[in-house]
Image (cartoon, rainbow, N blue to C red; front, top):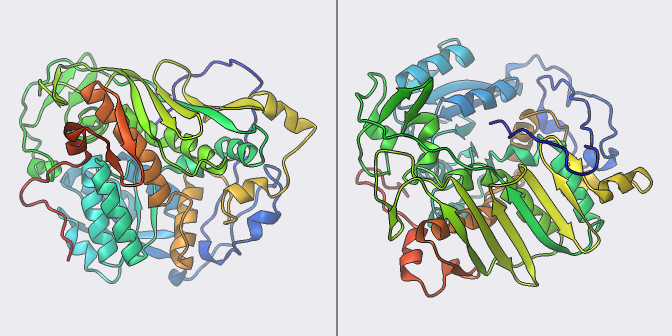
Length: 469
């Protein structure tokens, strides 16, 4: 996914370090403390390790969902991994993925469950649409597998409660695909500035995530011959397959466009929100904000009419196209989630403020680093003193494989992820109901609003319940 175009609004952009070629390595043999001795943003290019010749230095992976995200991820991680199994409800995608990453030699399934029973699969990657994340993730953990699962981890808040419970129960290592924590070094540098107290007490964080598209009325279409539409829907309600090609654009309720339907996603709030709200939440935690939110209010515009939180038209995109939410925290701290300003994160403290995006790090505290640099271990402390070398998606995968081998929590664990994703989900409920919500973070319940509380979960369609073993 690409970020919106940016224009400079304050200080000069901070520059990223040069990318280094991460050759295939035994990612698991680097000492965890090595990063602590590396000056922030000053290391010279280096590889994580020398090339290994032994087949045993590689790990096997099963891929659930073989679309664009899985392709991008395995392009990054293929130097360490052999794809031995692929599950996808679209046979065309599965075959293409198999040819690209396994020379057609991987086993292909239309159902992921046989992969959970295979002892020859070391780790799993889940890159399905959002509504298909929780079920295979929970079942994979119960089957003893470590998993790299794409974001957002869940469709609802209650799914997150289950995932966290099962992770604690099984001890499995789960990396969430919020690679912004690893692969865009400006964010980690911004968080190091926060962690070193350069902004003082944080009073406000803003996540600007852009708006969502609308669609025309999309007609019912014939299901493509290689797509198992019933299984693509899975836990979601049974509906017709919709497809329209118009003005060189494709509109559908499948594959990429699923993210603009509440039935399968949370729209922009859980798409880009899962990145920028994550950075906001991380900054608050580093600044000592230990308690979760107390309320959320705001406004949102939808492309269809809603009644009791339910879209009243089923032939077009229905997620919020524009919005602004105010999330209140104890201690007079707030988070703002909006679509109407420059994509990125604005962090404001009582000593200064900084703006950070995938292409810029700006503000007076950044300029002050020229005369008062961060300590050498500032970046390493934010990254939990784990091995690091920022290089596109590779670092996030290297972190996952390192943590899987060493049985430590990865940089994007399910617990911190759900802390921030709960905020995104609450924003979605607020948008659909059009009213303020009071939140009790200690029990993860909406206060005094039965209708809103009912939206913390969604029923699974018959035949697609989570198999708890």
